[in-house]
Image: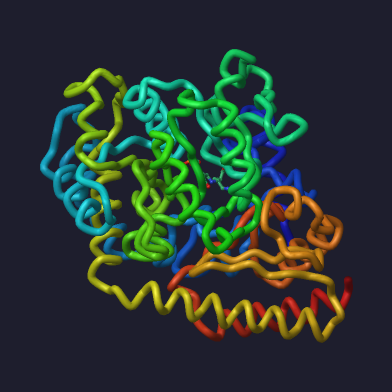
Length: 428
Ligand code: KE4
């Protein structure tokens, strides 16, 4: 696989875009090398600027659950664009997608659309703070909720500590209101709540983590968070930007039968166009302007093109309930194949997967939180990433990411991938 044209395009991009990319993870900093420039994509395949075809296991970090250039979404956008692209005024289309989303997801009465997962999570936290009249939030080390200041907080030392910013530009004043907990550690959360009695507005969590690889919640973890929140007047925010409309029709709330107070969405809900959303029961959502005092707004929120793409995507997922089973079966098949060949090649690894999210970690110990995810052998991961790239397979350019399986993948694609992993892992 040659990447000459991508390298040229990257050099040009670096002159006018910081780091040559519009989102850091695309720059291959975690794996080295230069990023691949995509020309087009269709179904399970990317076609890059050097004419290579790559089997895509990232799918734009989740949205392309039905494959790239999914016809009903493409047609919906084309037709809508002919009628105008943005009005800054309400349209019936927004009501249609809102009503469909509310019918698909448990425990929500109303939904507000925004333009990214960051905006959804940021707005959800502001809403929780306004509703509870409390300032602090708990997030988990290794969970990512977008780049809003309150979330860019790295664990300080010890379990009960105020976070310290891990990005310049985030003030100490902001950091002090974000408390860091360990994923899958309920005792740690209970201790934080005890030490900040009646001051915590919300706990925000990825109910299945996908930003430190894929990490499932331990049995009882989410139920424990639910109980702690109920007992302490804290709102439980499920960040389902990755898991929403992917792990089940109703997301993780349906999959694990757990009730969150606010749910955040992104990725799949926009069908590949910029859409985020947050939703809750009426009592909470009516706290939002223009009804209530909590302000939140956006010029392009609910714009017709994004709503048309999102509606077509949700309609497809709502009408073919078997899709989630198919995705789960394809992911299990892939996991079993990877397990077999890595074991045969005496590689030290663990595989985590839930539904159509999967990650491979090069460490023997179970990966259950950020600390254990950080133990993975990154040199092996780099060989894994670049070796697969040479075989025409694109996985996440970081060990701290999950793969996203698309229904456009065939079992031939999966077998091809397993054979490639067998070949590449013989070189470890
Ligand atoms: P966006 O603002 O990137 O649309 O969504 C932020 C976000 C919120 N919550 C979760 C659970 C997320 O995974 C994300 C974004 N995911 C990353 C991938 N790990 C997006 C890729 C990128 O940053 O370019």
